[in-house]
Every structure is written in C-alpha cells, then in structure tokens.
Amino acid sequence: MFLSFLVQDQGKRKTLINGGKVSKEKYVLAGGGRRRDAKLKRVEAGLAMARTLIREAAEDNNCTSSLHDDLDYIPRGYIYRNACAFHRSYVLMEKMFKIFVYEEGEPPLFHYGTCKDIYSMEGVFLSFMERNTKFRTSNPDEAHVYFLPFSVVMIIEHLFHPVIRDKAVLERTVSDYVRIISHKYLYWNRSLGADHFMLSCHDWGPRATWYVRQLYYNSIRVLCNANTSEHFNPKKDASFPEINLKTGEITGLTGGSPPSNRTVLAFFAGKMHGKLRPALLQHWMGKDEDVQVYETLPQGISYHEMMKKSRYCICPSGHEVASPRIAEAIYAECVPVLISQHYIFPFSDVLDWDSFTVQVPVTEIPDLKNILEAIPEDQYSRMQERVKQVQRHFLVNNPPKRYDVFHMIIHSIWLRRLNVRF
Image (cartoon, rainbow, N blue to C red; front, side, top):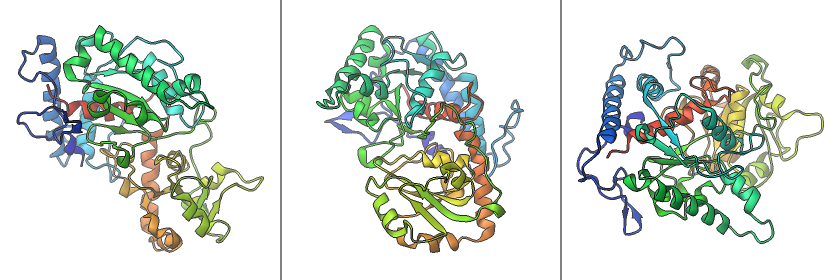
C-alpha cells in the first residue's frame, strides 16, 4: 500500500549494514546520537510535517484536505492505491522537494545520456535534471536528496571493450566518483549514502551499484531493471518505466482505436530471448488468428498500428524483467497483459496495476486465449478506460508537465526520502 512507505517504526534505528547483510530496519543513518546541525533540523522538520499531512490525507475518503490549491489535475479513480494520499504527497513534493546534483564529472559519462533508444529514459532524466529549476537546488544544505549523475549507458558505450568485455570499467568509474564526492562533501558520509540516489535504465544498472556497498545497500537506486531476485528492494529502491524513444519523442505513438474497432484479441511481436518468451512463441506463434504472436512482423504490417487495433497487448519480460512494451501498450490504449517474474512495476506504490492490466503467470501461457476471452466486456471496457487515464503518468513531455513520467520518477524518489530519518 501507499502508506507502507510512510508509517514506520518510530523506535531506534539500527545500522543498515550488519555483517555484510541488509538489516530489516532499512532507514538507519549514521550518527543517530550526534548533535544535528540547524540546517538539517529544518530539512527534517519539513519532512516530518509532510509525513503527517500525507497520513491525514490517506484517512480522508473525501480528499477534502487535498482538493484546494490544485486547479490542474486531481487524481481520482481505481488506478490509484490511495488517490487522496497521492495527491497530497504530490502537491507537497512540488512545494518542498529539493535535489542537489553533484557537478563533478564531465560528459559524456556524467550529466548526459542518449535519448533515442531503449535506454532513453536514463538520458531523458539526466537531461531534464540538468535544466530543471523547480526541484534542483544549488545549495546542498537545503537539499533533501543528492543525485549521482553518472550514466551507465554512456560508461558502457565509451569505456566497455566489446572483445575484452571487462566489466571493471563500471567498478572503477562508479567507485572513483563516490570516493571523490564523499571526500569533497560531508553529505555522503553523514547519511552513509541513504539520502543519495542513482538512476539507470541499462540492464547493468544494478551491477553498477555492486562495487560500493553503501550505494548498493543504503542508497536509493532508481532502476528500470527492478528485479527482486537480483536484490532490488522496493522499500528503498524505485522502479521506473523503460520507454524506447526511437526518435527522441512520443509523437504518433499515443492514441488508438475505440474498443468496438479493436479487431485483434491479443498481439505480441518480439525476439525469442530471455526465459519467458520462448514459451509464449512456442505456444502461440502462427497458431491463432485471435492471438497474433510474431517473432518478426510480416512486411507491410506496422507494429504500433497493430497495438492500436488490439484489445490486449502481450508484454513478456525479455533478457531483463522490464519491457518497453508496457509503455507502448499504454500509449496505444491497449490493455497490457503482463508476463513476468520478480518484477516490481513502475510507480506501484501509487498505481494499482491490477486495475488496468491483466497479469498472467508463466505457467498459464498455454491458456492465454481462454483467460482473455473469459474477461467480461464491461470489465474490459473499465480496464481500457483506466489505461487511457493512467497514460498521463507515462508520457514523456519536453518540457516536462505535471504528473508526467518525469514527475512520477521524482515523486518515487520523494517517497523514499520520506522513509529516511536522521
């Protein structure tokens, strides 16, 4: 639930790292008994007030405490776990949240990323943070979190040798960066990294954090590859969507046919890689006119147009748990059919994914058509309307707009900072 990130034990905090293992008490910071300086006290007092206001909103079924001072958009409906709490939290984030971006490091490894491929969200976020004036602060003493602006995509592209394949380039780059900022500034050592965050959409994003124990165990890791079997911890780490922006923008990707004109029951096109897709292709490829599954689309058939005329879009994990098809399905107003294991869906502390998707266990892939045909028409219509409603939270806008994917990522980081207490 949404408030699971806000209501925590008020007792003493234990240290995060204990004999090389992560403590169940994840919110511990170093120096709990030390005298806190006045600036830090002000920051913490503001966060304490925010926690109280969000709890109050969560208990207010009519959202009366969240309706004022917001004329743009009021979250409502079943797509949210708790619309009132989300709205109050979001408004407080806009008013309060400050991010300090370390300026150390030079492009292209730092402060920069590609915005035109499957890893585009990493570059998009770095680009927006470089230009952002609302959340970014130049004063580290007023910051709530500290951003480590390295790009795993760029490190791999520029330093990783395709023949030698020495992954130590990640270790050297990330470890050296943390060493530099921890020696130059007091903030990393003050919190053991718990109020710091990194962000990556690369498959090796989690690996990049292995080499610094405090980054791995303590810091907020914002990852597309949000795989709990690889130690993604949803209580401190945040999942964000993988979006393949081939042209750098979403023009032409959004919208789709009304339900009455969606003539294809279910659609998928993609390579047979990873652990889950072979079962899907083996059972359904070329075997059913209603469940259209392809490894390679026939010439003349548009991938995005197929999504726009399908009722359900099948989104299986590939090599990694995240798939750009989820955002593509939402853009096409096609109900996503999620087939994954150990995947924490993006923004799942706010969004109720059960309300606008169909989740199919891997073992039930052979029964996929029966599962989808058994969904009543009125239930499908409700899910499809909710897909259209949730779309705003996955849109990439330049410049960013309220409640879009950039702001939802920021909000996910804000929630996790609320869990950190000095």
